[in-house]
Amino acid sequence: MKKISKWFAGTTAFATLAGSAVATVAPLTASAATKIKNPFPVTYKSSKKAIKGGTVKVAEVSDTPFVGQWVQALSQEATDADVEAPALESLFWTDSQFKFKKGGPANITFNNSNKTATITLRKNLRWSDGSQVTAKDVEYEYELIANPAYGSSRWTDSLADIVGLADYHAGKAKTISGITYPDGENGKVLRIQFKTMRPGFTQSGNGFFLESAEPYQYLKSVDPKKLVSDAKTTTRPLTTGPFRVKKIVPGESIAYERNPYYWGAKPKLNGVNVTIISTAQAVASMRSHQYDIYQGLGNDQYKQARRIKGYTITGNQALYFSALYFNLGHYDAKTSMNVTDRKTPLQKTDLRKAIGYARNTAQVLQKYNNGLSVPANTTVPPIFGKFWDSSVPGYAAAQNLKRANSLLTKAGFKWNSKKTFRIDPSTGKRLTLTYLARSGAANSEIIAQNYIQQWKKVGITVKLYKGKLTDFNTWVSMTTDPTADQSWDFTDGAWSTSSEPSQTDLFSATAPFNFGHFASKRLTSLLNATNNQKSLKASYRVKQFQKYQKYVYDTAFVIPTSYSINWIPNNNRIKTYSSAYGNNPGGTKGNSWATMQVVSKTLAKK
Image 1 (cartoon, rainbow, N blue to C red):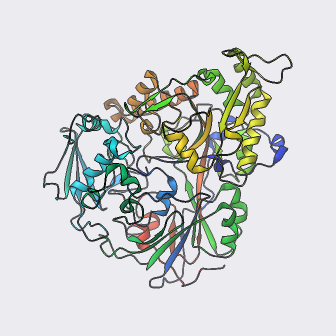
Image 2 (cartoon, helix red, strand yellow):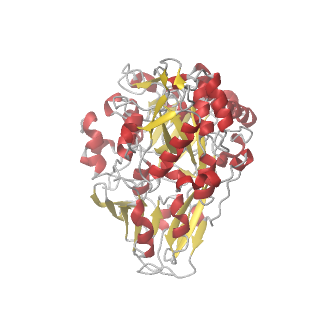
Image 3 (cartoon, rainbow, N blue to C red):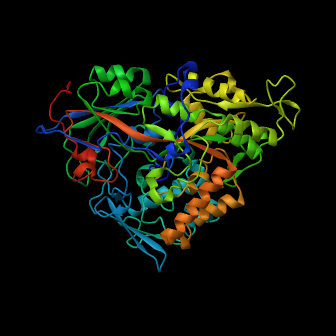
């Protein structure tokens, strides 16, 4: 979700690693985890006069094709969100602090006494074929997520707070009783009845309600099981943003043209073209000035990219964290529950902690990420200010082999007679674990082998899944599909998080994206406490987040590894480009894609 959470494999976040040179890097101190500074301007503005029209060319740096799923309830990849951005628009606009504001495609208001939210769509809000966006289209997104027939991975406990939605999800009701239409299904008003009013309701990405709509009339005739692959959701979508799809080459490129039915001001550009290019091609492509905007460059490419004339890099602290996930159970699709039942030595907390301490994460980040990533101490990024607990020490700030060895011995994993490996007390055999490391960056193999060597130092034998790195699409399947091969023990993952600090959608007992499948009564209680009625008081909520983050550290069911800075090179022919959060970034008066302009027909080379 941009508004639920986008995820992707986190291997590329660790950038370049060169042989044994890592051993010469001084470990970071724990306090280093708190220091994340944006070295870039947030907004770039050209002093030159804009020309009429023009087409902006965007490069999405990825070593795998984009899936191209346009229905938000069925989409689960960050790459899709990037390449579809010119045509997609959230229902609600937000300010730089991610709070809802008026003026977008729809407005939302709350009645705390009645426990309701009312969504009012713009009268001139239309789909890209000219048909009206209706209240039913907003409700339809809830059906797509809650009805298991569609196969959405977005269902969570948070949505169950809407009256009647859990019954609909369980097949006990044919309609959602808590969603009503004051002006009828074809009207412009939708009302949602909640069981409880939550502290994050005024914040985008809170997860308790959705922030998008889908064209019901256009999609209703498609078999639910086939919707995810139908042309109407993959190559012939209807959208509401300033641009609409002109042509899609599946997995490779999308050509956009102006959307004549866009509710806002007419887009300044004639079109936008988005193309997938590989990591290996990216810097050479910049040197040839082939694209205006480069999205998804790895931190290891920064030193090369920053010196290329004709481009300005803008950036901002990312809504992001990466983490090491342990495979501790399974997701039961029938009950929509994560079950922590896998027979694995990783059920021992001390083993998980030892794995975290043994990695030299900080060394890799310090020397090879150019200051664009820092060790993470919790799963709550520092961008959330007071909700982030800087006092939690974490595992990534400094490698601690002594501590790792002590924890392993304490947990009963004794060395063999030659002290070359440790023994699993449950089997009497060598402790051997499988690392699901993914490909992507040029250095992925070196990075993975480096970590395997660090674990070997404390006696943990680690092998790669099937003896090699795993491609991204296979990785996605293995971490989210309950029927996929689960013979892996841990993996690196990363999240482009929601713009609200709640982590219920990531780690609750019902969260499909909780791909470590850890669940406990205490975790459920802590997550609920960050979103209950008492948390309407900010000081109380801060304390609950502190308790939650300490619990994550104490149990190590997931080990946070890094925070990051987003950075995007944009060609100097673009009149204004901004990495600011919220709508109207950089002082624009409308959707940033709609207001984007260029100052020349050809790309700037200086």
